[in-house]
Image 1 (cartoon, rainbow, N blue to C red):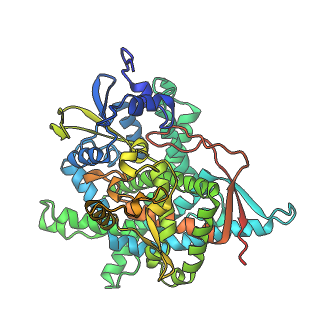
Image 2: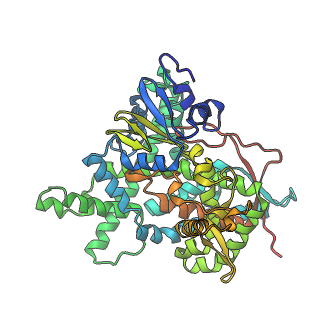
Length: 526
């Protein structure tokens, strides 16, 4: 593939992941044996990998990630100058902010959020059901909506509850409430300003120009920050009141955890004794707001895209949709009493989410800048190389997920256990060991059956990246998506429009559908 004299292979790399241009670099140009391909992005030498082992090695080798200045400028505007999204290296500031955020996503913290997530998911399904039942005049009894829109409403309500302890009421009204609309407008504006057609347009690049667009951006970003400031101030007073009164903490949201973590981190950071004893109200609101904006930005589009694609796949596979619904119905009473059981009770729904993330990863590419040489098999990749991880192509490569890598098969993650009459997660390591022992004995095991679905290696899934710079919100994202999927399919059937053909567009490093009209109807049980 011949490079552009100035841009190199930037046009191909910047294309949507299912386009011929994109695949010409990452698939067609790749060496058939090693899966490696080399190219140029502007004047930077680049390498792409297709083998999952190579991708894992790169992601675990380096946290260095270079962001182009023109993108950084927009992210600083919308997320703040200290956002994790735009911190390039792994220095002290990055580690400090990363550790603060990680404290809000521990296994215990996410488990404690399960009740709030289940509440939003149940309310969302009830609201759609009410719309179906209210549609009497049309005699169809259905609710029609654009997938990305409604799952943005669900995502922002989950964010409000688990991050802020606040209800944005989008799933109650099935509409975008004012603050939610400003959140969405801020994200969409940043996305639009960084598209290829706008990169060199001064009317979109300079925020100080007195344009209608800039006035709208200022209004929406101001609305978001004022709302977060008010919530943060109330939360500080609430935390201080509980601490001074010796009140035992109940369910904590992320903001409360971040406020407390900030105090602990500050006390361990060479501060004076008086500073180490500061109360939560002394925390820097500006940093807290930047962290909250980063968390929202990281999960807003990715979660809504993932849920939209899950709806598409269950619409295309009625059998899988029915299995999800049956499992959700069996689990419902248990989860009302104890939502923390979701991972065991909703194993098949979880598998559908995992398989959706494999075939339709919301973030379709990742990259690292090497700060030292790396060995990939017999090849040495020199320091200074920019390495691309084309996630979609890795997930659909037969070397990583078997001969049926391009098929949507939730059963590669779970198996039916007849004795317990339920779906359980598959143990890849154990099954791989048993398969190896069978081959060593020279026997033809069940793995030779063409219908056999090999267990997926969870280490080969890069939808949440890997290494020190992986997605800290992975646990919450899987919990949120699984609960929303199960609550919807338990009570409702979902279909896309007849004749619908999935098409994706590029948005940053994400690939949302250009459109996805969904139609929900009340599910009838025998």
